[in-house]
Length: 258
Length: 313
Image 1: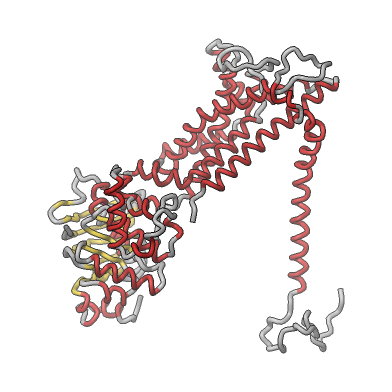
Image 2: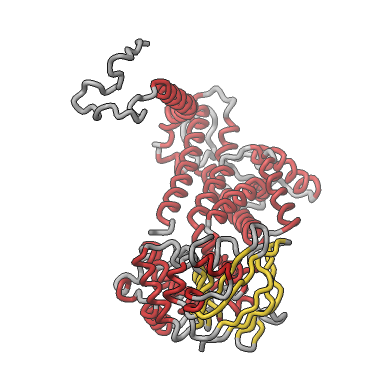
């Protein structure tokens, strides 16, 4: 069950510094939403507020509201650990757990949350690896360390790990920035497949990638360094890349700055 | 120094069959002679410093092994105590002292390692603000405490204040004071080496912080922590000041931590160090060689565990 995300008047801070200012957006279920913008514009910070990962950084805090369907994830009685089980995340650099095998990495989220049934775990390993298009490459070495895979395989392993806990939403923070073009293509194909089951939000520096994989695109920008980042424009991807309504968006996607 | 004839080709390889192609005017073809000289000079200084640093180590090992090594080859050394053996008589062994040293080291580790590791986990994974700064500062102070001061503190507490006897457990308490900061600092370094991405990866799966520490961070840092613990243990096993103040020597085997005297290798060395009779002198060197051997084995064990326990790629 994919969920809709409703963000209202969201501000994100590091200590006293406001990194993201007054973002309001709606993210539709079973779609891919790409967030683009120059470095330091707050798009990574913003995506981390959607699963309450922002606040693990000391001094970081969030104002405003984020609703998953009708539930406010920042409500006082909500456990951030539970939010992160519902909203999964894939990071910029592949980060498989070095002490665990490929199979253990995939079901790390399940095992660390107390699931012990071996049959269920084995099924989850295969289903998740198949969903991440990695099964055929690793099925004969499931007990080998996850860190021994190539960068692209490691990143797909991390995607398998993220979907093994069956989240409703999948956040991807520049998932291809450390990968070569072939691995990038594999991940992009995967994103297109996963879209039928999850709500996907992807931060990317690569505008072609945003154009290829996303249904909707949000453009973040900042006035100058030291100022907070803001959501400038959000629209259907083909509209953003063909006929954006705002001048700054056009300048950015046409390469006139940034 | 030869003068360089500017008219002829001054390249170092000029005229050699493998010499590079013609001068292309890129300024790349002249080797800097000054840099080569400085390089050589630095190399000589470095090797000399290394050799000087090795001299005392080799010297100590040589004198201890040449004077005490023979004792270790006698099987009695590893099976007998010094009970009933006088300074004039050859014979007896060091098993009472070996046993005491190992036992005190082990109990010290059992107490100091959990406290040290948990303190390090607090400092790295949880500690924020004033309390963490204070704890870290305290550990720094504890690191700098001379061992004799730790021993005097335990003496003041154990004997003067509580009125207990000088027993092996008091020695252990003093050694714990000395071992905790070593374990805290080494564990802290190892935990800091665990990439933050792994913690975030676990958080993003909905794993609580404590479980992330126990199941992801600690296993990743495990071999490094073990190495640090064993190095700390090697350090306290060779410690002498607390033993002199709190743990007098005896020639008999002792296993009771809470009553009677417990001999150790350092006190065995200290006991006979002023002797002139050859059998006693030999035993002093033998005990010294045994202590070095034990600590060497501990260090090797630490390295082996670090080697086989590290995450495989």
